[in-house]
Length: 288
Ligand SMILES: Nc1ncnc2c1ncn2[C@@H]1O[C@H](COP(=O)(O)OP(=O)(O)OP(=O)(O)O)[C@@H](O)[C@H]1O
Ligand SMILES: [Mg+2]
Image 1 (cartoon, helix red, strand yellow):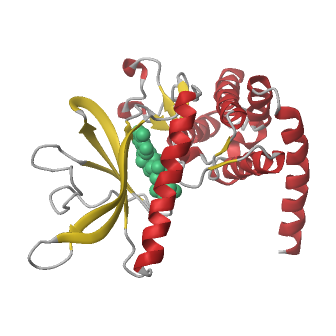
Image 2 (image 1 turned 45 degrees about the vertical axis):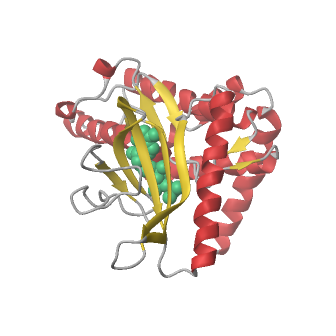
C-alpha cells in the first residue's frame, strides 16, 4: 500500500455484480497496491457502505492468485465478524464474494476471475493519520508565531487523550485474540460522537478535534493468536508508525501503552515482550 490516488472513477469502471453504477453510485475513495475502496450503498439506498475490491493480478499464476485473494478476503471477513461479536469497534461485514466473474471473452461471457470484494459498514470520520498531520501543521504554525517549540499543555493533553483511546482499542482487539498485522495511523478511523463534530475542511488551519471513538479497519493481514510475541510485534509496528509518520507525537507514545494496559488485563506480559522486540529492532538497525 503506497499510493493514495483514488481508484478508477465509476464512469470508466465496470464493478463486479451485484454492483451496478447505473443504479448505485460508486464514489472512489482510495487506491492501494492491493485494494480499491469505494463508498456506496448496500442492502438499502440509505445504508452507506465501504466496498473493498481486490482485483486479480494478471501477472500472478491464476491458481495462486485465486488462492491468495480468496484467503486474504476470507481472513479479513472472519476477523471482522469475530470482533463485531465481541463488541470490538470495527466495521461490520455486510457481504462478500471471494471470486467474482468478469467478461472472459469478447462475447461478454462472465467466467473469468476478477478478484474478490468485501462490503462493510461505512465508518464516518477521518483516519488518525490525517488528523495528526493536521495537528502537526497547526503546531508548526504556532511554533513559528511564538518562536518556541513548546507544546501548550491543552494541545499535549488532547494528543495524550487520543493516544490513550488508540491503546484501549488495540487492547480490546488483543483481548479478543486477534492480531491486526498492519497497525498504522491510516488504519484507525476517529469516528466523531456526532456528525456535526467532524472536522470541516475549512478548519484546515485550526487545531483538529480529537473527540470521538477509535474504529480499527483494514484486517487484510490480521490473524488469530494469543501469543504475547505477536501482540508485542503489533504494538511495535504501531510505535514505529508513529515515529516515522508523526515525529511531534512520538514523545507521547507511552500513552498508547497506558490505554492498552487499562483496557486489557493480559497487557503485562505483552508489554514486557515489547521491550525485547524493541531491543531486537535496535540491534537490527545498528547492523543495517
Ligand atoms: N469501513 C470503512 N469506512 C470508511 N472508510 C474506509 C473503510 N474502510 C476503508 N476505508 C478508507 O479506505 C482506505 C483504504 O482502506 P484499507 O486500509 O482497508 O485498504 P488498504 O490499506 O489498501 O488495504 P490492504 O493493506 O489490505 O491492501 C482507508 O485508509 C480509509 O480511508
Ligand atoms: Mg490500510
